[in-house]
Amino acid sequence: MTLTELRYIVTLSHERHFGRAAEKCFVSQPTLSVAVKKLEGELNIAIFERSKSSVTPTPLGEKIIEQAKKVLIEARTIEELADSGKNQLTSPLKVGAIFTIGPYLFPHLVPQIHQQAPEMSLFIEESYTAVLRRQLREGELDAIIVALPFNEPDVITRPLYDESFVVVMQKDHELSKLTHIKPEMLPGQSLLLLGEGHCFRDQVLEMCPALSNQKGNQIGSVTQGSSLETLKYMVATGLGITVLPKSAVGNLDSNLITTRPFTHPAPSRTVALAWRASFPRGKAIDLLLDTAGSCLLNP
Picture 1 (tube, one colour):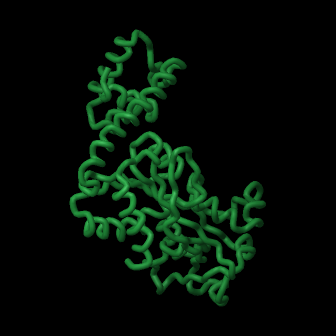
Picture 2 (tube, helix red, strand yellow):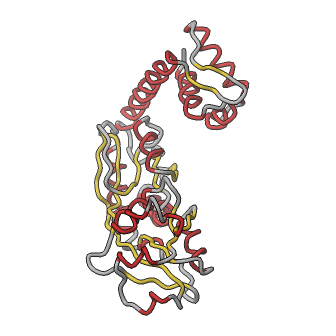
Picture 3 (cartoon, helix red, strand yellow):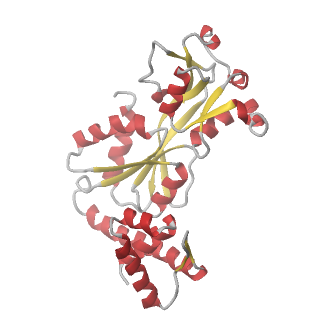
């Protein structure tokens, strides 16, 4: 039994497909398949049930996979402890961010980190909060940047910055005549939102009780987009209005689109950094905290 084999079965349990799991592990499908079969033979059990369309862990396999996750985390902790005795700003740092933060923070964060720690390469990833939570918990990422609230056992969370929301519309839209927008005005408009799974979508729905109450019967008046950038293009074509975090409005086409703030108190979100309490590279975390907290204010 090797750590590599344990990594294979954990990845396969996530992907439920030998081809995708092999790609994630950067090996060929036959290599991964043979290794999994070898481990099953060594343990004399079936870890997975296989069919033409899917791969599913057996009940006993689920328990073994959960234990494998713990073993891999402990193995990474040993490596991290060894690194902590060296220069903490030389080893690669794996940082994740949710889709509505990464594209606007990373272009500023990466060069500033490189300037202060040129030997510390950054592995960056964007995903949903739920995926980043799992990757952090299982040691696939060292730190993640998410919107609060975010609670996870044995994880430390520190706020980085607050940013308000703004309404984005075509320049000739009726709401452009106003200096500020009230949240209760949104249900009467064709509203463009991100799809299910994005926490920013939930924040927009929660900021206006009327929108939340209409989720069940009038959500058809809301058009969904796959990213904040897509929503801006949809606004430009006249499909409706949208709500964006202030950091996402920097590259708007001012000939087509304009923005308006909300009335006080303006809806907002708190962006935070989260990392495992056991992560030993405190200097790397401190650098992230100092840099990410200020780089959007001073790009």
